[in-house]
Amino acid sequence: MRVRAVELLTLRMPLVTPFTTSFSTQTERFPLLVRVLAETDGREVDGWGECVALTDLVYSSEYLDSAREVLRRYLVPAVFAAQAREAVTADGFAESVRHILGHRMAKAALEMALLDAELRLAGVSFGERLGATTASVPSGVSVGIHDSIDALLGSVGDYLDQGYVRIKLKIRPGWDVEPVRAVRDRFGDIPLQVDANTAYTLADAEHLRLLDAYDLLLIEQPLGEDDIREHALLARRMRTPMCLDESIVSTDAARDAIERGAAAIINIKAGRVGGYLAAVRIHDLAREAGVPVWCGGMLETGLGRAANTALAGLPGFTLPGDISASARFFAQDITEPFVLQDGRIRIPAGPGLGVEPLPDALEEFSQHALTLEAEHPPRPRAARERDAGPS
Ligand code: SMG
Ligand code: MG
Image (tube, rainbow, N blue to C red; front, side, top):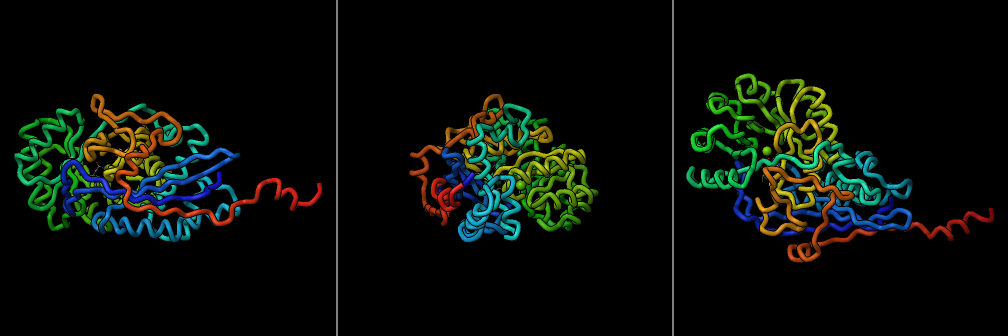
Protein backbone atom coordinates (compact mmCIF):
# COMPACT_ATOMS: atom_id res chain seq x y z
CA MET A 1 0.00 0.00 0.00
CA ARG A 2 1.13 3.51 -0.77
CA VAL A 3 -0.05 6.62 1.04
CA ARG A 4 -0.72 9.52 -1.30
CA ALA A 5 -1.77 12.02 1.30
CA VAL A 6 -2.84 12.37 4.90
CA GLU A 7 -5.47 14.80 6.16
CA LEU A 8 -5.64 15.94 9.75
CA LEU A 9 -9.17 17.07 10.54
CA THR A 10 -10.10 18.70 13.82
CA LEU A 11 -13.78 18.67 14.70
CA ARG A 12 -15.73 20.47 17.38
CA MET A 13 -18.73 18.59 18.73
CA PRO A 14 -21.03 19.55 21.61
CA LEU A 15 -21.70 16.95 24.31
CA VAL A 16 -25.30 16.23 25.23
CA THR A 17 -24.49 16.90 28.91
CA PRO A 18 -21.35 18.12 30.66
CA PHE A 19 -19.09 15.24 31.73
CA THR A 20 -17.29 15.88 35.02
CA THR A 21 -14.41 13.73 36.24
CA SER A 22 -11.95 14.23 39.09
CA PHE A 23 -9.83 16.35 36.74
CA SER A 24 -12.18 18.44 34.59
CA THR A 25 -15.59 19.13 33.14
CA GLN A 26 -15.89 18.48 29.42
CA THR A 27 -18.73 20.24 27.61
CA GLU A 28 -17.55 19.61 24.07
CA ARG A 29 -15.22 17.22 22.32
CA PHE A 30 -12.60 18.20 19.76
CA PRO A 31 -11.84 14.95 17.95
CA LEU A 32 -8.74 14.87 15.76
CA LEU A 33 -9.33 12.62 12.77
CA VAL A 34 -6.64 11.20 10.53
CA ARG A 35 -7.63 10.39 6.98
CA VAL A 36 -5.15 8.38 4.96
CA LEU A 37 -5.57 8.38 1.18
CA ALA A 38 -4.04 5.06 0.22
CA GLU A 39 -3.72 3.05 -2.94
CA THR A 40 -2.64 -0.37 -4.05
CA ASP A 41 -2.71 -1.80 -7.60
CA GLY A 42 -4.57 1.25 -8.84
CA ARG A 43 -7.33 0.91 -6.20
CA GLU A 44 -7.80 3.83 -3.82
CA VAL A 45 -9.39 3.98 -0.37
CA ASP A 46 -9.66 6.33 2.55
CA GLY A 47 -8.56 4.97 5.91
CA TRP A 48 -9.78 6.70 9.07
CA GLY A 49 -8.17 7.10 12.45
CA GLU A 50 -9.25 9.02 15.54
CA CYS A 51 -6.91 10.48 18.12
CA VAL A 52 -8.13 10.13 21.73
CA ALA A 53 -6.11 13.04 23.14
CA LEU A 54 -8.22 15.54 25.06
CA THR A 55 -7.98 19.27 24.38
CA ASP A 56 -6.15 20.05 27.61
CA LEU A 57 -3.36 18.50 29.65
CA VAL A 58 -5.63 16.81 32.14
CA TYR A 59 -5.77 13.08 31.43
CA SER A 60 -2.40 12.54 29.77
CA SER A 61 0.72 14.42 28.79
CA GLU A 62 -0.56 14.40 25.23
CA TYR A 63 -3.24 16.82 24.14
CA LEU A 64 -4.95 17.88 20.94
CA ASP A 65 -2.41 20.40 19.69
CA SER A 66 0.59 18.24 20.58
CA ALA A 67 -0.89 15.27 18.74
CA ARG A 68 -1.64 17.31 15.64
CA GLU A 69 1.83 18.82 15.66
CA VAL A 70 3.58 15.47 16.18
CA LEU A 71 1.55 13.94 13.35
CA ARG A 72 2.25 16.86 11.05
CA ARG A 73 5.89 17.28 11.79
CA TYR A 74 7.13 13.77 12.57
CA LEU A 75 4.79 10.83 12.09
CA VAL A 76 3.28 11.51 8.69
CA PRO A 77 6.66 12.51 7.21
CA ALA A 78 8.12 9.28 8.67
CA VAL A 79 5.51 7.25 6.77
CA PHE A 80 6.23 9.16 3.56
CA ALA A 81 9.97 8.58 4.04
CA ALA A 82 9.55 4.88 4.81
CA GLN A 83 7.49 4.25 1.70
CA ALA A 84 10.37 5.35 -0.47
CA ARG A 85 11.98 2.05 0.65
CA GLU A 86 9.06 -0.32 1.05
CA ALA A 87 5.29 -0.56 0.96
CA VAL A 88 3.46 0.84 3.97
CA THR A 89 1.78 -1.65 6.30
CA ALA A 90 -0.03 -1.14 9.57
CA ASP A 91 2.12 -3.91 11.05
CA GLY A 92 5.34 -2.10 10.11
CA PHE A 93 4.19 1.32 11.26
CA ALA A 94 5.16 1.11 14.95
CA GLU A 95 8.70 0.07 14.03
CA SER A 96 8.99 2.82 11.42
CA VAL A 97 8.24 5.48 14.07
CA ARG A 98 10.09 3.89 16.99
CA HIS A 99 12.77 6.58 16.79
CA ILE A 100 10.09 9.18 17.54
CA LEU A 101 9.77 9.00 21.31
CA GLY A 102 6.47 8.88 23.16
CA HIS A 103 3.29 10.42 21.73
CA ARG A 104 1.43 7.15 21.70
CA MET A 105 -1.98 8.73 21.14
CA ALA A 106 -0.75 10.45 17.99
CA LYS A 107 0.87 7.23 16.80
CA ALA A 108 -2.25 5.21 17.57
CA ALA A 109 -4.40 7.53 15.45
CA LEU A 110 -2.19 7.19 12.39
CA GLU A 111 -1.81 3.44 12.84
CA MET A 112 -5.59 3.12 13.09
CA ALA A 113 -6.02 4.98 9.80
CA LEU A 114 -3.40 2.79 8.09
CA LEU A 115 -5.02 -0.34 9.45
CA ASP A 116 -8.43 0.82 8.27
CA ALA A 117 -7.09 1.57 4.76
CA GLU A 118 -5.29 -1.77 4.58
CA LEU A 119 -8.33 -3.72 5.73
CA ARG A 120 -10.70 -1.89 3.38
CA LEU A 121 -8.37 -2.79 0.52
CA ALA A 122 -8.28 -6.42 1.67
CA GLY A 123 -12.02 -6.65 2.38
CA VAL A 124 -11.38 -7.66 6.00
CA SER A 125 -13.13 -6.16 9.05
CA PHE A 126 -11.41 -4.71 12.11
CA GLY A 127 -13.03 -7.41 14.23
CA GLU A 128 -11.65 -10.22 12.07
CA ARG A 129 -8.20 -8.65 11.96
CA LEU A 130 -7.95 -8.07 15.71
CA GLY A 131 -9.40 -11.46 16.58
CA ALA A 132 -12.92 -10.68 17.82
CA THR A 133 -14.91 -13.80 18.62
CA THR A 134 -18.34 -12.19 19.09
CA ALA A 135 -20.70 -10.12 16.93
CA SER A 136 -21.60 -7.60 19.65
CA VAL A 137 -20.25 -6.43 22.98
CA PRO A 138 -21.90 -5.62 26.33
CA SER A 139 -22.22 -1.91 26.93
CA GLY A 140 -21.22 -0.14 30.10
CA VAL A 141 -21.65 3.56 30.76
CA SER A 142 -19.40 6.01 32.56
CA VAL A 143 -21.35 8.43 34.75
CA GLY A 144 -19.75 11.75 35.62
CA ILE A 145 -19.67 13.56 38.94
CA HIS A 146 -23.02 15.31 39.50
CA ASP A 147 -24.06 18.37 41.50
CA SER A 148 -26.19 16.31 43.86
CA ILE A 149 -26.91 12.71 44.80
CA ASP A 150 -30.48 13.13 43.53
CA ALA A 151 -29.26 14.23 40.12
CA LEU A 152 -26.84 11.28 40.04
CA LEU A 153 -29.59 8.80 40.91
CA GLY A 154 -31.72 10.29 38.12
CA SER A 155 -28.95 9.80 35.57
CA VAL A 156 -28.09 6.27 36.71
CA GLY A 157 -31.79 5.35 36.59
CA ASP A 158 -32.05 6.65 33.03
CA TYR A 159 -29.02 4.67 31.90
CA LEU A 160 -30.32 1.49 33.52
CA ASP A 161 -33.69 2.05 31.82
CA GLN A 162 -31.88 2.32 28.50
CA GLY A 163 -30.33 -1.07 29.13
CA TYR A 164 -26.72 -0.34 30.06
CA VAL A 165 -25.39 -3.46 31.75
CA ARG A 166 -22.78 -1.85 33.97
CA ILE A 167 -22.47 1.51 35.68
CA LYS A 168 -19.15 3.23 36.33
CA LEU A 169 -19.21 6.17 38.70
CA LYS A 170 -16.54 8.83 38.49
CA ILE A 171 -15.25 9.61 41.97
CA ARG A 172 -12.97 12.15 43.65
CA PRO A 173 -12.28 13.16 47.25
CA GLY A 174 -15.62 14.42 48.59
CA TRP A 175 -17.63 12.43 46.01
CA ASP A 176 -16.92 8.77 46.59
CA VAL A 177 -18.45 6.67 49.39
CA GLU A 178 -21.68 8.64 49.55
CA PRO A 179 -22.65 8.38 45.86
CA VAL A 180 -21.66 4.68 45.80
CA ARG A 181 -23.81 3.98 48.85
CA ALA A 182 -26.74 5.93 47.38
CA VAL A 183 -26.57 4.05 44.06
CA ARG A 184 -26.37 0.68 45.86
CA ASP A 185 -29.29 1.61 48.13
CA ARG A 186 -31.47 2.70 45.22
CA PHE A 187 -30.58 0.18 42.52
CA GLY A 188 -29.43 -2.86 44.48
CA ASP A 189 -27.14 -5.48 43.09
CA ILE A 190 -26.23 -3.90 39.71
CA PRO A 191 -22.73 -4.31 38.23
CA LEU A 192 -21.03 -1.19 39.62
CA GLN A 193 -17.49 0.16 39.56
CA VAL A 194 -15.69 3.45 40.23
CA ASP A 195 -12.99 5.50 38.49
CA ALA A 196 -10.88 8.08 40.36
CA ASN A 197 -8.62 9.23 37.52
CA THR A 198 -5.58 9.52 39.84
CA ALA A 199 -7.31 11.76 42.41
CA TYR A 200 -6.02 10.04 45.58
CA THR A 201 -2.75 9.20 47.31
CA LEU A 202 -1.73 6.27 49.46
CA ALA A 203 -2.56 8.44 52.48
CA ASP A 204 -6.23 7.96 51.52
CA ALA A 205 -6.02 4.17 51.87
CA GLU A 206 -8.17 3.95 55.00
CA HIS A 207 -10.85 6.09 53.42
CA LEU A 208 -10.80 4.14 50.14
CA ARG A 209 -11.22 0.92 52.13
CA LEU A 210 -14.74 2.11 52.99
CA LEU A 211 -15.63 1.31 49.37
CA ASP A 212 -15.00 -2.37 50.10
CA ALA A 213 -18.43 -2.55 51.72
CA TYR A 214 -20.20 -2.06 48.39
CA ASP A 215 -19.13 -5.08 46.30
CA LEU A 216 -17.71 -3.06 43.46
CA LEU A 217 -16.42 -4.85 40.36
CA LEU A 218 -13.27 -2.76 40.62
CA ILE A 219 -11.71 0.55 41.53
CA GLU A 220 -10.00 2.21 38.57
CA GLN A 221 -6.79 4.23 38.87
CA PRO A 222 -7.11 5.73 42.36
CA LEU A 223 -3.44 6.85 42.43
CA GLY A 224 -1.03 8.60 40.06
CA GLU A 225 0.02 7.43 36.63
CA ASP A 226 3.55 6.58 37.83
CA ASP A 227 2.43 4.96 41.07
CA ILE A 228 2.65 1.26 40.19
CA ARG A 229 4.33 0.47 43.50
CA GLU A 230 1.76 2.47 45.47
CA HIS A 231 -1.13 0.78 43.62
CA ALA A 232 0.34 -2.59 44.61
CA LEU A 233 0.47 -1.48 48.24
CA LEU A 234 -3.08 -0.13 48.12
CA ALA A 235 -4.34 -3.28 46.40
CA ARG A 236 -3.09 -5.30 49.38
CA ARG A 237 -5.10 -3.14 51.73
CA MET A 238 -8.40 -3.30 49.81
CA ARG A 239 -10.77 -6.10 48.94
CA THR A 240 -12.08 -4.26 45.86
CA PRO A 241 -10.08 -5.41 42.80
CA MET A 242 -7.52 -2.87 41.59
CA CYS A 243 -7.81 -1.82 37.94
CA LEU A 244 -5.32 0.42 36.17
CA ASP A 245 -6.03 2.83 33.32
CA GLU A 246 -3.63 5.82 33.09
CA SER A 247 -0.63 3.74 34.29
CA ILE A 248 -0.89 1.18 31.49
CA VAL A 249 0.89 2.95 28.65
CA SER A 250 2.59 -0.08 27.06
CA THR A 251 2.94 -3.85 27.12
CA ASP A 252 5.92 -3.45 29.45
CA ALA A 253 3.89 -1.31 31.87
CA ALA A 254 1.11 -3.91 31.80
CA ARG A 255 3.51 -6.79 32.52
CA ASP A 256 5.16 -4.81 35.29
CA ALA A 257 1.83 -3.87 36.92
CA ILE A 258 0.56 -7.45 36.79
CA GLU A 259 3.77 -8.95 38.17
CA ARG A 260 3.93 -6.44 41.01
CA GLY A 261 0.33 -7.02 42.04
CA ALA A 262 -0.78 -3.51 41.08
CA ALA A 263 -3.41 -4.59 38.55
CA ALA A 264 -5.92 -7.38 39.08
CA ILE A 265 -7.81 -5.97 36.08
CA ILE A 266 -6.73 -3.73 33.20
CA ASN A 267 -8.63 -1.06 31.30
CA ILE A 268 -7.22 -1.17 27.75
CA LYS A 269 -7.42 1.96 25.64
CA ALA A 270 -5.76 1.58 22.26
CA GLY A 271 -4.91 5.28 22.10
CA ARG A 272 -3.09 5.22 25.42
CA VAL A 273 -0.89 2.25 24.48
CA GLY A 274 0.09 3.31 20.95
CA GLY A 275 -2.56 1.59 18.86
CA TYR A 276 -4.93 -1.31 18.38
CA LEU A 277 -2.12 -3.75 17.57
CA ALA A 278 -0.38 -2.99 20.89
CA ALA A 279 -3.78 -3.21 22.61
CA VAL A 280 -4.17 -6.76 21.29
CA ARG A 281 -0.73 -7.66 22.65
CA ILE A 282 -1.71 -6.37 26.10
CA HIS A 283 -4.91 -8.38 25.88
CA ASP A 284 -2.84 -11.46 25.05
CA LEU A 285 -0.41 -11.06 27.90
CA ALA A 286 -3.16 -10.27 30.42
CA ARG A 287 -5.11 -13.31 29.29
CA GLU A 288 -2.05 -15.46 29.69
CA ALA A 289 -1.68 -14.10 33.24
CA GLY A 290 -5.37 -14.65 34.01
CA VAL A 291 -6.01 -10.91 34.32
CA PRO A 292 -9.41 -9.78 32.97
CA VAL A 293 -9.42 -6.73 30.69
CA TRP A 294 -12.08 -4.34 29.44
CA CYS A 295 -12.14 -1.65 26.79
CA GLY A 296 -11.92 1.94 27.98
CA GLY A 297 -13.46 4.92 26.22
CA MET A 298 -12.34 8.45 25.40
CA LEU A 299 -15.63 9.96 24.20
CA GLU A 300 -14.92 8.69 20.71
CA THR A 301 -16.94 9.46 17.64
CA GLY A 302 -18.38 6.54 15.68
CA LEU A 303 -14.96 5.90 14.16
CA GLY A 304 -13.16 5.21 17.43
CA ARG A 305 -16.28 3.53 18.76
CA ALA A 306 -16.25 1.10 15.80
CA ALA A 307 -12.65 0.13 16.47
CA ASN A 308 -13.31 -0.18 20.21
CA THR A 309 -16.20 -2.59 19.66
CA ALA A 310 -13.91 -4.76 17.52
CA LEU A 311 -11.21 -4.78 20.21
CA ALA A 312 -13.73 -5.50 22.95
CA GLY A 313 -14.86 -8.56 20.97
CA LEU A 314 -11.63 -10.40 21.86
CA PRO A 315 -12.08 -13.27 24.31
CA GLY A 316 -10.09 -11.74 27.18
CA PHE A 317 -12.43 -8.74 27.35
CA THR A 318 -14.57 -10.40 29.99
CA LEU A 319 -15.90 -7.23 31.63
CA PRO A 320 -18.24 -4.71 29.94
CA GLY A 321 -16.36 -1.78 28.43
CA ASP A 322 -16.97 1.97 28.37
CA ILE A 323 -18.55 1.49 24.96
CA SER A 324 -21.86 3.25 25.12
CA ALA A 325 -24.25 4.28 22.36
CA SER A 326 -23.31 7.38 20.37
CA ALA A 327 -26.23 9.19 22.02
CA ARG A 328 -24.52 8.94 25.44
CA PHE A 329 -22.29 11.81 24.35
CA PHE A 330 -23.47 13.17 21.00
CA ALA A 331 -26.86 14.27 19.72
CA GLN A 332 -25.37 13.72 16.30
CA ASP A 333 -22.43 11.43 15.62
CA ILE A 334 -20.26 11.74 12.52
CA THR A 335 -21.05 8.15 11.45
CA GLU A 336 -24.30 6.24 11.54
CA PRO A 337 -24.94 6.23 15.28
CA PHE A 338 -24.07 3.25 17.45
CA VAL A 339 -27.20 2.13 19.28
CA LEU A 340 -27.88 0.00 22.30
CA GLN A 341 -29.69 -3.28 21.59
CA ASP A 342 -30.48 -5.36 24.67
CA GLY A 343 -27.57 -3.78 26.48
CA ARG A 344 -25.13 -4.52 23.67
CA ILE A 345 -23.42 -2.68 20.80
CA ARG A 346 -22.89 -4.45 17.49
CA ILE A 347 -19.40 -4.76 16.03
CA PRO A 348 -19.56 -3.43 12.44
CA ALA A 349 -18.99 -6.31 10.02
CA GLY A 350 -17.94 -4.45 6.86
CA PRO A 351 -14.36 -4.01 5.62
CA GLY A 352 -12.08 -1.93 7.83
CA LEU A 353 -13.94 -0.03 10.53
CA GLY A 354 -17.18 -0.85 8.74
CA VAL A 355 -18.42 2.71 9.21
CA GLU A 356 -17.60 5.97 7.47
CA PRO A 357 -17.92 9.61 8.37
CA LEU A 358 -21.03 11.18 6.87
CA PRO A 359 -19.83 14.09 4.69
CA ASP A 360 -22.52 16.44 5.99
CA ALA A 361 -21.58 15.75 9.59
CA LEU A 362 -17.89 16.22 8.88
CA GLU A 363 -18.66 19.54 7.30
CA GLU A 364 -20.95 20.63 10.10
CA PHE A 365 -18.40 19.94 12.85
CA SER A 366 -15.20 20.74 10.97
CA GLN A 367 -12.99 23.24 12.71
CA HIS A 368 -9.58 22.86 11.12
CA ALA A 369 -8.09 20.81 8.29
CA LEU A 370 -4.57 20.23 7.07
CA THR A 371 -3.50 18.10 4.11
CA LEU A 372 -0.02 16.59 3.86
CA GLU A 373 0.94 15.14 0.50
CA ALA A 374 3.59 12.52 -0.17
CA GLU A 375 6.42 14.47 -1.75
CA HIS A 376 7.83 12.08 -4.28
CA PRO A 377 5.14 10.17 -6.08
CA PRO A 378 6.62 7.15 -7.86
CA ARG A 379 6.90 7.55 -11.59
CA PRO A 380 4.43 5.63 -13.71
CA ARG A 381 5.50 2.06 -14.40
CA ALA A 382 6.13 2.73 -18.11
CA ALA A 383 8.64 5.44 -17.24
CA ARG A 384 10.41 3.20 -14.72
CA GLU A 385 10.70 0.43 -17.25
CA ARG A 386 12.13 2.82 -19.82
CA ASP A 387 14.71 4.03 -17.28
CA ALA A 388 15.74 0.45 -16.65
CA GLY A 389 16.90 0.20 -20.26
CA PRO A 390 16.08 -2.40 -22.89
CA SER A 391 15.46 -5.86 -21.54
O1 SMG B 1 -15.99 7.17 26.23
O2 SMG B 1 -17.44 6.37 27.60
C1 SMG B 1 -16.46 7.05 27.37
C2 SMG B 1 -15.76 7.75 28.50
C3 SMG B 1 -15.30 6.79 29.52
O3 SMG B 1 -14.85 7.58 31.70
C4 SMG B 1 -14.42 7.43 30.58
N1 SMG B 1 -13.17 7.77 30.23
O4 SMG B 1 -10.60 7.60 32.65
O5 SMG B 1 -11.71 6.07 31.76
C5 SMG B 1 -11.48 7.26 31.89
C6 SMG B 1 -12.22 8.34 31.14
C7 SMG B 1 -11.28 9.24 30.40
C8 SMG B 1 -11.92 10.38 29.69
S1 SMG B 1 -12.55 11.55 30.78
C9 SMG B 1 -12.83 12.99 29.91
MG1 MG C 1 -10.32 5.70 33.64
